[in-house]
Structure formats: structure tokens, C-alpha cells
Length: 367
View 1 (spheres, rainbow, N blue to C red):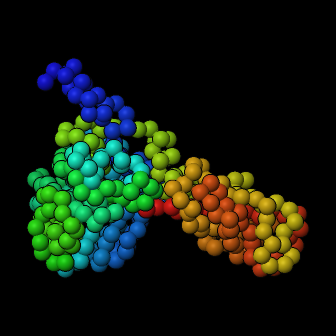
View 2 (cartoon, rainbow, N blue to C red; view 1 turned 120 degrees about the vertical axis):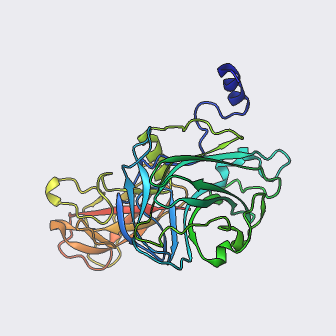
View 3 (cartoon, rainbow, N blue to C red; view 1 turned 30 degrees about the vertical axis):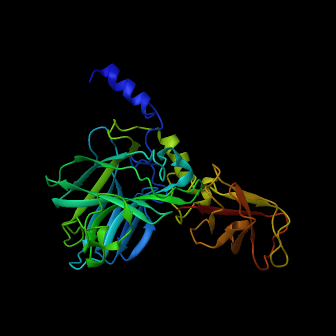
């Protein structure tokens, strides 16, 4: 096919130029919660790289990092390094969740349902067969595919295409409608069935049926991923590189912080810098309990939904606000909306008249 024909095909499939990639932070550029987290085991959490949730059901202990080891054309990856092995895994997977209102062009649940193509780069010491799934959370449906890592410790690009699904309309809302899941280890609960190569009702035994490796069975194990792209059609196009600023704004819809971007939640903020990195409330502090200040924390973007707010004292202690002379008081967030919130100290606050109070915060509206 000529270059002109390729361009015409892209335009005809409505995937040309920008906005092809349905994945947020696919190049692993944004890491608001920190660049490294140790001791990850037996938990479901967003750690380091934004928008990629990690689920580990006692399948080894890992250090999770936003790594600088990346294939040509990329600067970062999401890396798992096993620190304590477990030869009898339960489950270990990476999940990327997507809002239904951003997926209506897939026409899922109609006779015109679109095929989608997933591409990504992976690297591991452990060769073998892995499984990745597309999961319809609104209608409990699933389709999967396997891919192989053939060369140890070498970056490889993988491409899989998922059929369109004529059953199950995705909700046109801000809920978790569609998820991608990359399986890295599993027990019999998740690998006793068959790979769901066509759309089906979710059966847990099929979710990792094609997986024949277990990342976390040895302290030598590591797994890295980057360059994740999900797009309409049967062809993988070159990765859609977006600016760090654009990716950060997209990530902040789900999680944001008042800390400077180079400071991670819960870290100490030196008062000597003159930069509290938070929201300020001024004057006429409460001499009795629960008198609110008339000041607000504001988010950099409108969030997906009303978030969960965590307040911090400048020393990094959660649940606290900072008073005059950097005193620490219990704090409470109130009137929480998708654009901002109010906060105040709780309980009696001494020497508080005409005193500034500060609240450093995180806001979490993750799917």
C-alpha cells in the first residue's frame, strides 16, 4: 500500500493524527505518587506511574518504579522487580481502566462494533507466554489474547487485535466501563479454563488461561512495560506521543496533589522555602470546635467525580492542617466537589485569631 493510500485509510477509519490512543499515560511519563515504591504485596493500588493500577494477591513482593530503562523513542517504563519470591501465586496483574463516555465510538453492543488493536513494549528476564485481556465492566464480558516474550532482557513490541463486540452497550458516563489487564502470575482460580479469543461472559478461570510464566516466583524476576496504545481498527499505528503537560492534565482528572510535581505526597515540606505547596485559610480561626474557614483547596482540572481528600501537615503527617508557627491540628475537608473543597481545623485551636492555616492535600477520584 502506498503512503497516500495508508493516509487515506487512516482518515477513513477516523484514527488519523491525534486522539488515536485511548490510553492515558501510555508512555509512563507521569508519576505523581512517586518514582519508587517498595514492599508491594497482597494489595490493590495505584503506585508510581499514574493510571496503571496494580493488583497483587500474595504473588511475591515487589519494588515498583517509574524506570528510565525504555526502548528507543521512550524515556520511561513501569518496572516490577521481585524482592521476595512466592512459588505459589494467587494473582498478579496490571490494570488500566477507562471511562465509558470516552469509548462510545467503539459502538460496542451494536452491529457496527469496532475492532481494537493494542500495542505495547515489554521486557522481562522470563521468556514464555503471557495473556492480556479487554474486560467489559458494564456487562461482565471478556476477550483475551496471548503474546510471547521470546528474548530475555530485551525490549520487544507486541501487537494484539480484539474483535468488536455486538453485545453489551457501554455506559455513556464517567464509570469504569472497559479495562485492560496484563496477567503476570496466577493460581488455578484464574488459569483453569481456556483463553477467551472471542467475547464471552466473564469466567475467572479464563482470565489467565494462556499464561505459562509466573513473575514473582524468583527474586531474579522483573517485568517492564511502556508505549501502551489502544486504538480503533486492525492495524497498529505509530505510538501517539503526547506532551508531558497534556498527559499530566489527563491524569489529574483522576488524581492530583497540591504538592509541587517533584515532591511526593506525605513528604516533609520545609517551611524555610516560603512555599507551603497547599491551600491557605486566613484569619479568625476557630476558638470552638468545627468553625470552618472561608477558604478552599482547588484542583488543577475538573476531576472525574467528587474525590477523596487527604490533608497533610507540612511534616507529611496525614489528617492534619498547619497552623500559626507551623502548629499541627487535626483537619477536616468539607463541601467536597469536582472543582474544589473547603477545609478547617477540628477541635479547639489556641492563639488562632488572625492566623493563617494551611492544608496540603491529595485528591483521589480514580476508577
